[in-house]
View 1: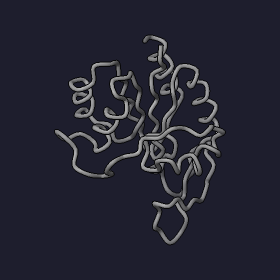
View 2 (view 1 turned 90 degrees about the vertical axis):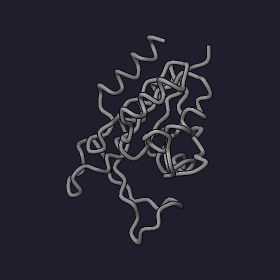
View 3 (view 1 turned 90 degrees about the horizontal axis):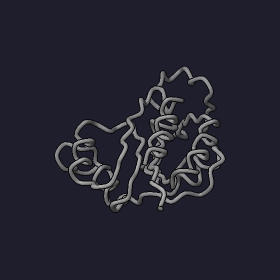
View 4 (view 1 turned 30 degrees about the vertical axis):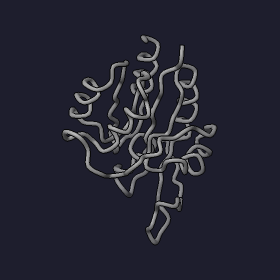
Length: 169
């Protein structure tokens, strides 16, 4: 059987960008980055927890890991190496930040296209009830949409929920 996909957003789940600016979350390290999509005069501040790499690698036993982030393939250059992750496939969004059907997050329609009927779990900080409803109506395979608080990032219960969901398939 083919493994379900684990679609991983960076900003929010791995980089708790909405945490208090002056206080790095416990367990996180600060990185300064200049990905191609960053046009700020100063490098982008990214907080990453190195433990997330081993957590995601453990989940790779049950999932095919995929970047589902606006970083696209640059997540393999800037994020993955700092977490000890191998190069991962990524969702190459046809259009970012555009219109979305029925009040959903702009990524949702493309997540379903990428999944192409496969079971998937998706971690993102912008998932809403509209996205849950849309996926339930449009995607016939199992799907877990896990909203992550962008002030906190992924935490132990999130990793446990992902492992339990995959085990139950």
